[in-house]
Image (tube, rainbow, N blue to C red; front, side, top):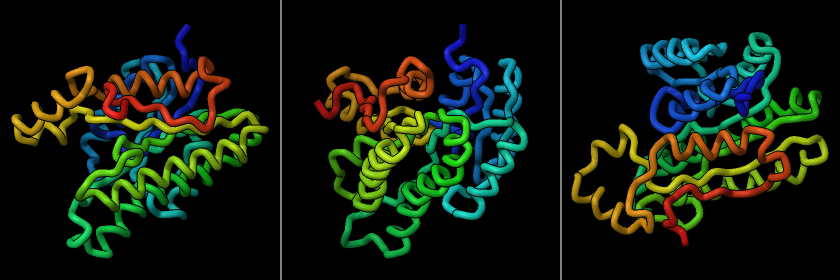
Length: 248
């Protein structure tokens, strides 16, 4: 028995990195996948095909999670197409790193809007149908940076810390309807983005991690499968750090 058989999952920002890893693992576990992307049509088409080849229903939607109306529209479209939304994974995110002295107001606002407001937008868009079906799992992607801060990332850290408080509140509000809300806080995960970094820098980061390696999108996807499946049916309002021991 696959862990996510007959479920439908909506994942934001799924065409690369962590989001893509989650989408593929979820499909392998039997979940139908609706996913969003912002601009990479080719990558979205390729992912749609890859997921369909795993034997599940899959569809990509070009949608801006940071836009409230677009998020509401997306949820309506997904429900029409798939019939239900059982798991929501808020994964879309950006960085605009700079020291506080140099962060512009626009760089602050944009990161809060894409990383934090999108979580509000999508959660609000799906909860009515989840309440009706009296079940649902919401998984929000925070970061080790949201838990401990990081110089040069005040905007990103604020957005990711905000996700934790938001998720705990949602868990308290919706627990009686059997809707769970949890957070995953990834540490240093090696993706296309980190591949562009200087090898020495990456080596230094790996050495500072107790497990002596960076994580992979698969590590995050495995944690997501657990929180999206019935294996975690008594877990809500929690933050799971998947960071190789960075915060220990």
